[in-house]
Image (cartoon, rainbow, N blue to C red; front, side, top):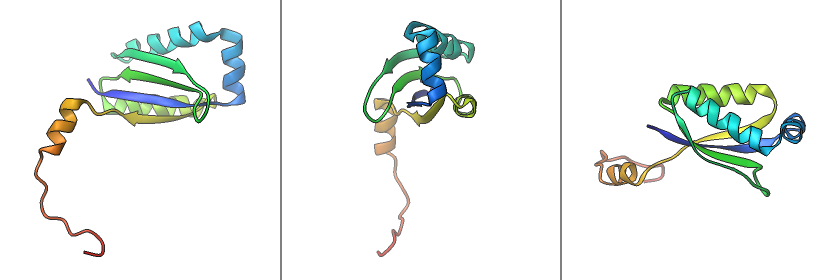
Length: 107
């Protein structure tokens, strides 16, 4: 099942909701949402610095992951970023795949 990292920053509206509902409620909702999409929540963290939160989630299809990201983005509570994650096996397959000859700019 494809794995994604969804990370981002809360807007003022999102911070107000987090303060109102609490961190446990946010985690539980992320877990419920992942399961409702047919996936699972692997990790959920808050952070400070360049991002406020991140979660690692398995979502059964790329279309579902994109739709989820668009839905959350349209809510106005997060400014998020959806990042597909690459497993060791996927990277091994990619690094052993032959490419046709490609002429890069300036070559």
